[in-house]
Image 1 (spheres, rainbow, N blue to C red):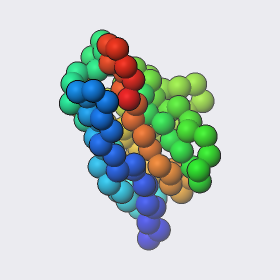
Image 2: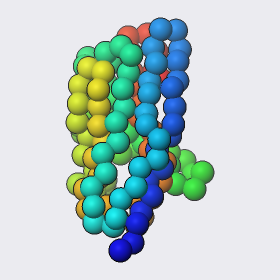
Image 3: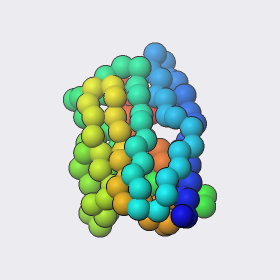
Length: 114
């Protein structure tokens, strides 16, 4: 069985009163399912202004999901975003070897973006 390690940024970014937290690394067998959580200390703007990015080998981050659940054009449907307010999840179903990467969430709030 091949194991794929999906590295998630371990972060607790804070600006003003807002903190965005993601978990540590997660792993999956190829073909498995991975869920990556993102929690904000305050509700995001409009309840759904949250994006997910994928970054491979120090390259430029690639937008996967915007408005919490909308898939960017060209992104495979195995990537799914869900959640609202302050709790969000990126799910990768049928994980492929090329999905090994660092994944970031970005939240938008009334006066700032994290």
